[in-house]
Every structure is written in structure tokens, then in C-alpha cells.
Length: 318
Image (cartoon, rainbow, N blue to C red; front, side, top):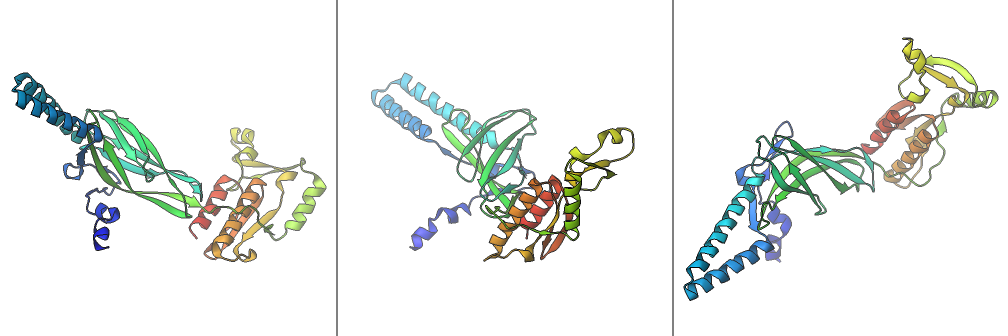
């Protein structure tokens, strides 16, 4: 049992050197951080060379010895170029857009080089072992997107990526481990159904007024408020330098609701967060003005995609 623990891959991986990132989030691959071993093709190639060497020595065939040593020198040069293909590579990782639990969180890996020499057949390995190949032009950058399953709400971190190359002859595999600090936000998974949220004070009178005036009646302009949809902005008035003015219609005077932590009952906090997420999505889809009350703070009434994302962010980080 003690030997198994010592040979555990997780324990052994801690012995490898990592490419550390600087204060700017940029990592540079150094010479002592690259590992290299022969591939299956390289082992077969070495076995063939060994057979050729033994046969040439046995039959005293000078031409066979010449070909054998020539192919061995080609393999040595290929090994050097495989190692050199990773040396000095610049790596930066960035998080992708927010996703919901159960979806795939994406990260962008930016590969660059200071010199003029292009880097061929560079592969980025994700956590699932998938290989994403890229070519880095000399003095330029290449971008690779990798994904990871979002299993928990909150900030999901990409702690490490593996870079590898088998260029030019695929006889050797060189790789390195790069530490990362990229994060992406994971929203809670919404419930399938949720109870109706509580109405804001004075909502009943507003609803009766809407029903009385009709959904297509023009109620007049008002100043723009954060969270208003760009489709409601009077762009003609803005072109006349009257500022941001929003057109009000009867349908725009809809319900104002509060999505409240204390108004939702659930067996555990995660289920309650899932119900609140569903209420937020339903309110945004219906075009309502909604606010969010949580134990850690309150997000005021608003409307629009930006307001929805602020509320979802509060729930994700609660």
C-alpha cells in the first residue's frame, strides 16, 4: 500500500517543474521546464536502427553503418528541434464568458513568441485530455479555446495547462506544465419551475393602469435609467441632441417585482438559489422591472441584460 501511494500519479505530478506566470499573467517557457521522451514511433525507429547496427557490424557492411549513423544523427537533430519548439514560448490564459452549472466553461489560451521563428504543431491539452493544435507565427500570436465542465457555481479557475509538441518528425514528445490564473464565472443552475415573485409596492395600481390604457398606448417620454433596453431609446431625439430619452408604452408599465431570498422556501440553500435563478430568468424574459434581495445585499429595480447579469453574479458568488 505504501508503494502504491508513492507511485500515485497525483503525487508524482507534484515533482515536475511548472512554468510560473509573472505579475502580468504572462508565462515564459524556460529550458529547465521542458520534458522530452521518445514517442512510440521513436521507439520503433530506435529499434530499427539497433537492428541495422547489429546487421552491419555482423556482415562488416560499411555502407550499412554509414546509413545507420546518418539516421541516428537525424534523430538527434530532431530531438533538439522538438525541445527548441517549446523553448521561449509565451503563454497567457483568460477566462471566457459566464456559463450556467452543467455547461462547459471556456478559457482562451494565447500563445506568442518574441523571435521570428514560427512554432509548429503546438498542442494545448485540456483537463479532459483533448488535444488542441495550433501554429504560432514568428513574432505573432495564436489563440486556442479549451473547455472544462462547470460543476459548481462561483468562480471556476484554470490552474494549469499542458503544452506539448512532436514537431518535426514525431519521434519525440516534448511537454511542459504552465500555471494559470484564469477564472470564469459560473451561474447557478436554474430550477425547472419557481413560484411567482412578490410584487413591488404600488405594483397593483400600476397593473390596473396598464390594463385600463392598453398595451399599445403611448404614455410619453422619460429620461433614460440604467437597465432600460436600447430598443426603447428614442434615437431620433438623441440625434437631435436631446439626450437619452426612453419611449413609454402601456406594455412598458408592467409589474415591478422583488425576487427575495426570504420569500422562497427550500430544503437547502442551493435549491433556494436555483429557484431564485429561475425567477430572475423568467422576470427578464417577461420584460419586467425586477430587484433582488439577498442576505448579503440588495440589487435595486432594473431591467435589461446588464441588470440580469449583475443579479446572477450576486447569486453565483453568494
